[in-house]
Length: 72
Image 1 (cartoon, rainbow, N blue to C red):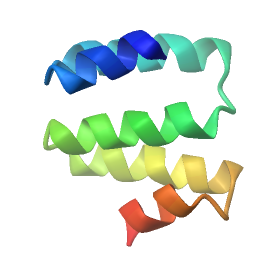
Image 2 (cartoon, helix red, strand yellow):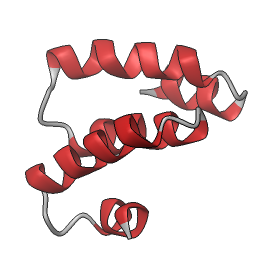
Image 3 (cartoon, one colour):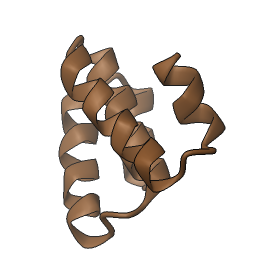
Image 4 (cartoon, rainbow, N blue to C red):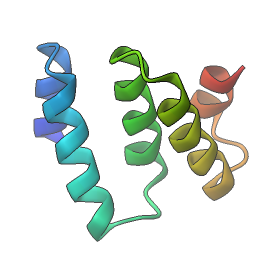
């Protein structure tokens, strides 16, 4: 996850997405990773994919404030 943050901070969202997808293969119920994947897709301009992943984060944790903020 630290590597994901570094890539995203550098504007390398494609790389961050790839890393998050790999991480989620191992830990599919991680709300933070799922939300961050949605945020990375938002930065890439892929709103449908972003919404899908943010909604999945909300399905895992309906009270996740960051996901609620993003989806609102």
